[in-house]
Image 1: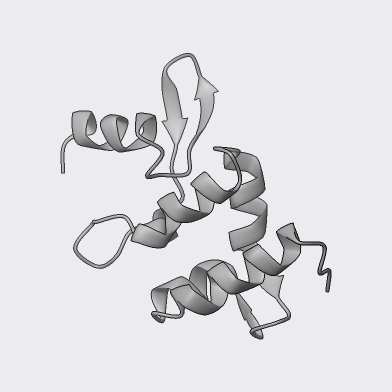
Image 2: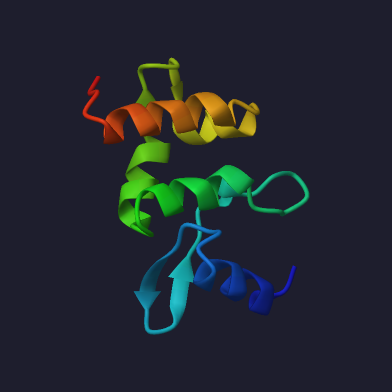
Length: 96
């Protein structure tokens, strides 16, 4: 995995990242699988949240009561559809 690949994925909206210093970004490690590939649902979540990295970070770091799991853990368990359904329900006004 190269720095250029990570940076490209960030610019393409495939990774959650935030700038800590000029041109230095922090990437939560939980968004990568055991091979170092970003989970595909991360980009879908970012897209659904209009690229808002902070909103995606909050959503995935919090317990999602609808599924009884923290978002990033549910993704790692392969529960992408449940996570996306919970996000969609919230965008339609369903709150937990």
